[in-house]
Image (cartoon, rainbow over all chains, first blue to last red):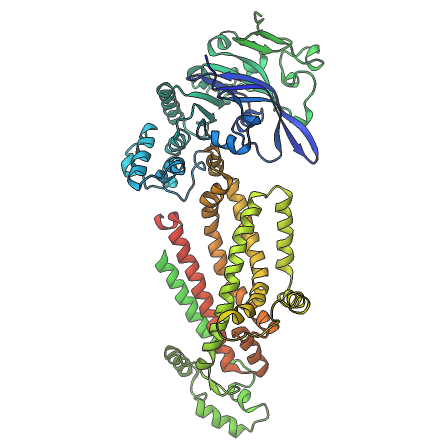
Length: 324
Length: 309
């Protein structure tokens, strides 16, 4: 099957004070139409930098130093900036974590939803409004006809995230990057929005790159999982294979740290410590200092690749032996 | 919102008129001495006080002061021998022309420079702009004025060093350029620093990233999204800069020998022409209050949230 997005050996470096250090490296994955790939990891693991690199919106001081980002069969990194920009919105849409700030506070929502269409062609006010109405109905904003002229501050967080999704999908992109889209929302709103995204995905054969730190959402909403730690891949696989036999101690720890509503409600089995900063990356496994299964080899040599294309892990001492 | 703002302006106006009234009475020896001179005989002073109504109780004088203001009577200048209200007209027109030119120059350059600074905030260009702003904000108006005269009038001989030229047309325009630039530089530097900071804050907000992620060009994002959100607090700031415009105007008009209100204020202070001085003080105060009110009204029209909440 044709891929929508293919990341090959992506490396992003950050510059500070004339020195550069790697932020993410060796990131490789494919995403097919109608599928969801979940990128999972703690804060500071490079998930959002990966998303920004794919969008071509890396912050000042960061640059892609190696690898390829293949969108629709062409390497975005070799495109002139103007052409890459034109892929945004048209081929890739993006929604981000904080829906409260994601919309322009001084424009009514219908104008924001229809903005990209109006840049492409001249629309009469009437057509523009009816198109905005359709776009907002698609993301299930209730009583939308009477709310077209409302401003973002008149909507709840969940509704604003729906509007943000409508903006991202306004030009029917093939790929949606959803960077922690429901982290700031309550559990019920979160489920509603993710179910809506799933419906839109089925209707439009949309590929979704779903960035989250919450593994509990992954089993339900994703087809494939990509676990990142300290800028590198630690484990990757289809949801069924990976959850059936978690190999990497980091994935294992992430799974155990999911808060459960039953039992000891407030106890969160967490991993000690925080991910290392990019300045202190070592040759060996970067999780070694926090790993409960650490052995001598871990800090000495880079972890070997185990498993096969449907489930792989990079580990010296995995929970399970993966068949090659 | 607007009615409350209007009430505040009216209250400020009453304060202003009252303060200027007491200011006149606080002059050393009272107005009679400043007209007749310090060595006038007590009889002459008493006669003049009677003639001008200065022997009446303060409350009566205060009421008369208000009544005269409503009739547009601002007193009589004993130095220039003309009714102050007739004197002020021409000078006010010249000052408004100069100040509006300077303000337009300052605001436009502040918007442009501020947007560039906000966009390049983390890079070298943003820091260079920041340094230039402090430099121009700190340089005194008379220094900038003299420097500009030296460069553009004496060395290059491009523009006249002072005066107002013939009324209307090119000559008047040419005479306006140097004083307007002089007046605009420190105000523009202050405004652009404020606006640059504002633009930088806006650029960090998520909706800018949303707009970029939709494939909008940097220029479009700048004017359609960032500018209109950053500009609202800036308008209030422009209103607050109006007094600085008049203060800078006194120095600028003196340096360029430009006969406007600031120049007249400076002359009347030297001549101890109290009726003219108090009238100018009153006028500048009124223009300041009106300018701030206009800024707030404009702001409430632009800001949807002020209207709704």
